[in-house]
Amino acid sequence: MVYCDFSNSLYKYLDIYHNGLKKLANKEMQAIVGHLREMSDENQDEILTQFLSDYCDSDVWDTLKDRGNADIPYELKEYILMWITPRCEEKKMPECRWYYELFRNHKQGYQAAVKYLEIAYSSMKCDQKTIDLLFDSYLDILGWGAHHFPDGCIIEDNTIVDCFQKCEDILKEKTVSERLINQLNYYRILYECYNRYVDDGRKRKYEDYLNEANIHFLYSRAFYYEK
Image 1: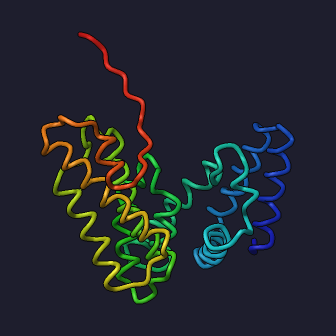
Image 2 (image 1 turned 45 degrees about the horizontal axis):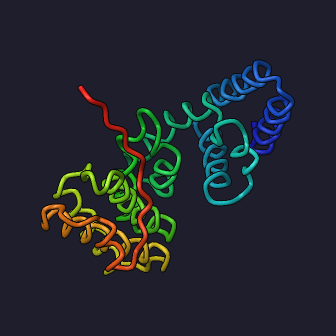
């Protein structure tokens, strides 16, 4: 099998899937993965490397992202996880970045995703996408921590300090998009407002601090139950 054959098989799978024949599509995907299992390591490496390059770094496989859960079909993705993990352990690039893009929300892969992204950042082959993804991963943690402001912060103080510091370290070493820098500044002000609100004994409304800082915060809905 060459990459052209692999691509044609994926397009065949998509045609079947979009026609609503999901059981038949699953059989087609099982056949695709079966062919991958049977081929030589060299052939498999060539095909999967090209596929992930097309999937992660171009719009070639946007049609795959339009299906169902907007992800690579389960059986193929699980096979990719098995294939890519040893390559990440060898600190290969761009595999370490690809791993993060593919498995940061995976039920098992998420545990190693940030670790591999940090390895990608430290690599001589670090690219702009890696820089932005790592920076954004720390912003995601800060965003999660602020999820229930002003009722409380759901990450620890040392995690907050660590995320801000790591973002600052990246800014000293690399070029980061203005959008991400603005987002970092937003979280810095948001957390400052929250800390002032707590330090003042929560006597004033949290909105007062936000208004004074001229920022907007979208509140999460919280439900409280009596015991």
